[in-house]
Image (cartoon, rainbow, N blue to C red; front, side, top):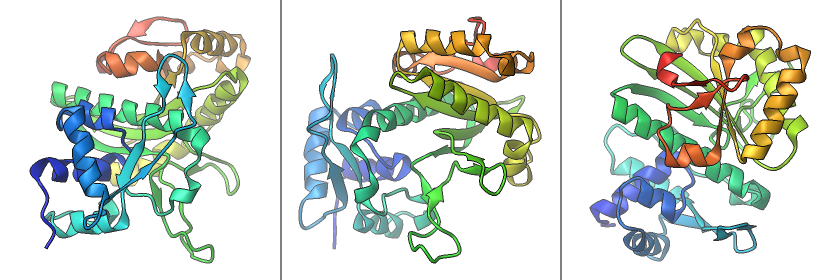
Length: 291
């Protein structure tokens, strides 16, 4: 019979929730000090447990931050163990990679940023007494990996606009406050390609304008309003260029866009209150509680 400590169980639960986590991220969730997290993960990875796997990114470096941290995830054995030992938890609620071979090295930083968004959002929800209904990330999948299956494996954030035209945001989440229900789409942008970022936001705006995003959640969550779009940008310079391009583009001229798009840089997501200091296209700051 497998026996684990309370800290080790908490790590498994966190991996089931976020799918991928670094040691720093696990420690930031209040599990334990980084050194103890590292020791616990080593035990969970090794025989006879083998409940956790690791993806190593030794060749990935970010200026000023050094070598990339390893990324940890549940193995299939770990997912099954957690379900068997957690009352009311279904395997479909447990996120774990079906195939590690498809996790690309060039997606590492983007994945880290997206998980940081979720961690920051959930801390904000808890601090304010709100209720999170769901948080879906692009690397959360549903369906089957078998090519001939009627339900092929796809991102849970994929929403069809037409048969061949779709959006696949980095995250979609919904929460309740005492006065409203709010649906958010989140795009996380790193790199230097301003045009690509703006074109992605155009596609999302198009999907919202056609009502397909609201329709996607309308029946299950009784939601009828248009979502807001949160844009998390890697650098201040990229943010300035994106805002400049959007403000010069007639596509974003309608007043609705001023109420739909809000921006932050990555460091503000990680280090500051999630709900504060989002700026709209004109640079006006706001609090998510006021939307």
